[in-house]
Amino acid sequence: MNSPSRVLQGALRSPAMAAPPKPGLLVAGATGVMGAEVLRRLAGSGRFRHTGVMAREPITTGLSGVSILLAADKPLEDWLANASAQVAVVMFEPPRLYYDRERALWTPVPDQLPALARWFRRCGVQTLVVVMPHIQGRLPEALRRGLATLDEHDVAAAGFERVLFVRSAQKGQAPKPAGLLSKTAAWMLSTLSYMVPATEQPVRPSKIAECIDAALPVLPKGTHVASPELLWQAAQSGGKSLHGQSIHSVVEAWLNNRPDPVRP
Image (cartoon, rainbow, N blue to C red; front, top):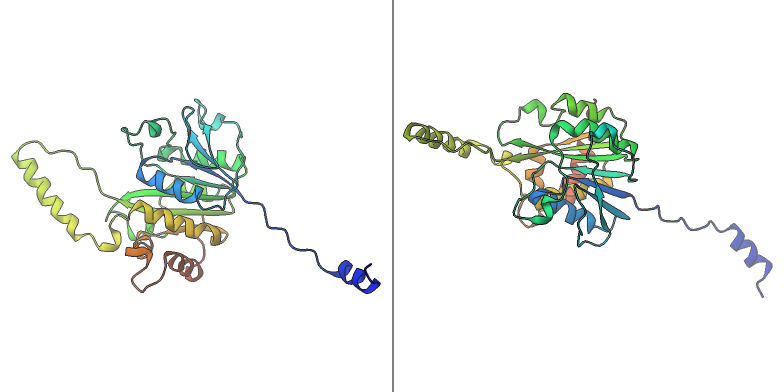
């Protein structure tokens, strides 16, 4: 039989704090090497109770905790809020056509970003990550850490608690030259690619996925822009930066030491 003192101690003992519920995740553009790596990394992190992948037609995902969310065949402005999630990731890499499964997935185009962001908000999304590709060496200095377009300003002002734009460099797709003069000019221009600084070279998709995975749990409120230089620093060989730091350490140091969040 419990003594009165033990009963009193039990009554006064503060109850254990229950773990917060895991958020839901929505992924638009889970195509290409980038989309596949980000989906694999986030869905396998164990931090999300469920992951919904947007698709044009029903398919099986083959991943635990991942299901298909069919994109309506009508303008985004008319989409119903038929999903519930707190985190969303948007990517724009087109599907690899020799992957049958990817042809069934839905990938937005950049012009759809503002309308897609508004739909995410109607679905309850509070944290949005947008992987924005750009041609290597052609992103103006002022835009590497700031908002680049009116569409990005619209997204930043859409009411999300947290927005992260990831500046992902890509190699330019030059048209195939025809004729000796065109081929000579193309060769001369191609030599300029070697003049692009290392920090502006494309980063492996798996490293970008790891950077996003590292940023999401510690992302402060506001709008943030991950520059090409940050991605390069975080993506050095072996998951370590130049100074032996892990990718998580590089991302956390950036978030702790960055200037004030970008204002829309």
